[in-house]
Length: 145
Image 1 (cartoon, rainbow, N blue to C red):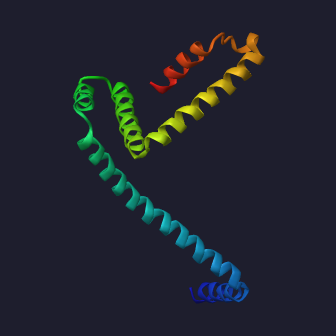
Image 2 (image 1 turned 135 degrees about the vertical axis):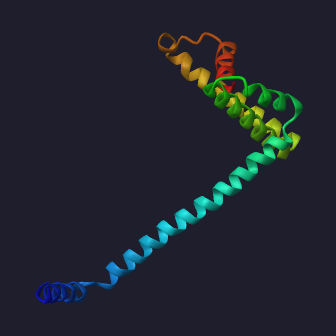
């Protein structure tokens, strides 16, 4: 037993002698990064759950009715509807911070982007088969739902 302890101790001494300051600092920074990630994730999840609770409280009556209907649907449908409600609440929150000028600028930028997209799609009409701007806007509405 004593021989094993002496062997281990001699190996430990060689290991400690070969440690560099760079290695020790790297190990300490790694542990600090892991700890900070854990700490902030735990803190963010509490803040996020508080925000979700506040969003649910501030939903208008239509969204509250929708949330009541979710109880009777399947889990997948529940998740889909919850995402819709959450997206609508976030969108309304963002839009409420905009001035009327900013809203007009956003609509103008959206129209310009749609026109540029339509022009690109028109260049390869056979490939994408989009014939009019109205058709493109209707496809866009599908993604917004």
